[in-house]
Every structure is written in structure tokens, then in C-alpha cells.
Image (tube, rainbow, N blue to C red; front, side):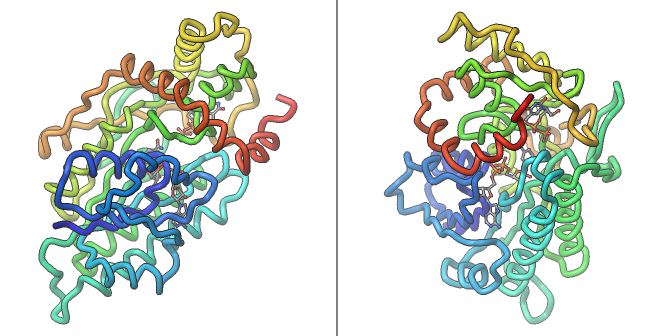
Length: 352
Ligand code: NAD
Ligand code: TYD
């Protein structure tokens, strides 16, 4: 039996990971520590309500006494650390909370893991592991060619990516200084069910379904490398099981698209599936994001070679499944957009 502390398990990728793990493993207990910020939603986990292998705890990863208690009470032997402030636009507006959660929160988890797992002689308890779920954004921005490898120097630009790079470096320091068995994954942009509609794909689906303007930053030609969320979850599970401590694994599926291409694909799907009135006249080119990274592209060769991972969901299939999911889960979309998100949306997009 593995006892895994999953942080941020009510968010987009964290909740998909919990659903994936419960479906694919019998002998596990997942302790899900999530503060339930605007981005966390227990509705994401409704389908596993009553499954005794999932225990939800509402709380802050930065709360030392709480995290120490969870390690002890549930005999935690692995940590999969998703919890973060994750939206670049918010980090530009309000960077402080990104340092608080992403850097200091991670530091607290590391301190608690060490207190629980390090033996008196400096060795570590058998079988323990800490997975830091990182992002390719820590590598900065690419030109027209080339890919991010695990050796690419860190060069973060936004407050979000700076905070994630700092967290990665603390995890690496815990491995190098104290010997914590830790791996870092760095994944490209995810899409799929349960993503909060502030990120590009769910925002465009939400707005298109409501015949609202589709705000495209700058010239729309920035490139992101998209991966279906379940493929990411499978990669994390593999790194948890077989990843070599001290190693970084980049995760991506060679699926680069410009933003405007993505927006056009979503318009076409919504047009064909539900509303023939939705068309490209909804597109609005708006002011560019400050410090907007031009291109991300992952080289996933290492995780393929060492752990046998490869993506299973092609983009054309994944984007259609995602649009279908949002169309079938209009209640979810309505609920998560009824509170804090709307204030934020009004502030960010009013007048555009
Ligand atoms: P998300 O914003 O959807 O979810 C974050 C979750 O963390 C929420 O449930 C929130 O309530 C929780 N949380 C926030 N602050 C907390 C705190 N102080 N204590 C406990 N819980 C807290 O984010 P996501 O898109 O699911 O991303 C998860 C992780 O994956 C992040 O670390 C992110 O940097 C990383 N990542 C995301 C992507 C992507 O495309 N979304 C790509 C690569 C890596
Ligand atoms: P986002 O989903 O915020 O992910 P990230 O910035 O972490 O890659 O944005 C993806 C891309 O889409 C990014 O280049 C910014 C752009 N974008 C828009 O053009 N309009 C929008 O409304 C949003 C949210 C993003």
C-alpha cells in the first residue's frame, strides 16, 4: 500500500491525476491537501465520492503543523506536488501570492518531508519519493527552432515561471544537500476536462459557447506545445514509480500550435456541434501580455527512452473530447464561473 500526499488535488491536473490513479491502482491511499482557492473545486472529484482510498483535507501547503500531522497520521511515503498559483496573467497582476504558495509552500513541504523521512544517520527511509510537478515555462522562450531539453538553462520571465523555477531549485537543493529522493517533471501546456476557464482553451470554449468575444493576445502567433492532461498524469505516475532520484523529466508530445490556430479550431468545433452563429467574427486581437514568451517546445526524448512514456491522445481527438466535455458539463462551467472568476474576468477583459 502506497500512501501518497497529493497537493492541489482539487485543481485541474491534480484532480485528473487523482481520478487516473484511483482508476489504475488498487493499493493506494491518496491524501489530497488543497486550499480550495478559486482554482480548486471539489466538484472535480464527485465521481470518486465514497471511495475510501481518497481522503480530502482542506488546508494550506504552507501550514507547517498541518502538513507534519498529515505525514504522521497517514504514514505518507510519497508526495506528488501540484499545488500552486498557476496563471501567468494573475502573476503579472499580483506576484506576491506566487512567491508565498509556489516557493514558500514548496519549502514547507520539503521541510516536512525531511522531518518525516530522514533517518538519524542522514539516510532516508526506504521507498520514499517526492515529485515536483514543474513547468516548461522555467526554460524561458524559444526562437523559431529548437526544443527545451532537461539541460536547457533556466531562464524564467514571468513572476509565475520565476516562482516555479525557484521551487524546482529548492527541490534540487534538497536532493543535492540532504539526499531527498526527488524527481522534477517539466511539462508543456495541458488541456482537458476540469481546467479553470481562465486558461486559453477553456476560456475560448466558454466564451464561444456564450457568443462572447475571444481575446487573442498580440498577433496570436505565440506558440504553445499542447498535451492532453491524461497523458501528463500517466507520465507523473511513471516518474513516481520508476524515475531516478535527482533527475528532471521533460514531458510533451511535439504538438506545437499558434494561439490563433487553437482559437480557430475551437470556433469550428463549437460552430459545428452546437451553434452555427459562432464564427471568426468573435475573435478580438487585444493588447499583448507583458513579457509574453513567444514559443515553448518540449523535447520528450529522455522520458520516452528511460521510462517508456509516450503520449496516447492526438491533438485532434483531445481537443474534440475537451470541447465535448465542456458542452456536457455546462453546470460545472457555470458553477466555477459564478464567483471569484467573474470579478477577475470583469477586471481583466472589461472594455476589450
Ligand atoms: P490549478 O490552478 O488548476 O490548480 C492548483 C490547485 O492548487 C488548486 O486546486 C488550488 O486550490 C490549489 N492550491 C493553491 N494554493 C494552495 C495552497 N497554498 N495550499 C494548498 N493548495 C493550494 O493548476 P494546474 O493547472 O492543475 O497545475 C497544477 C501544477 O502543474 C502546478 O504546479 C503547475 O505549475 C503545473 N503545471 C501546469 C501546467 C498546465 O498547463 N496547467 C503545465 C505544466 C505544469
Ligand atoms: P495560458 O493558457 O494562460 O497558458 P500559458 O501562458 O501558461 O502558456 O495561455 C496560453 C497562450 O494563450 C499564451 O500565449 C497566452 C495566450 N492567451 C490569449 O491569447 N488569450 C487569452 O485570453 C489567454 C488566457 C491566453
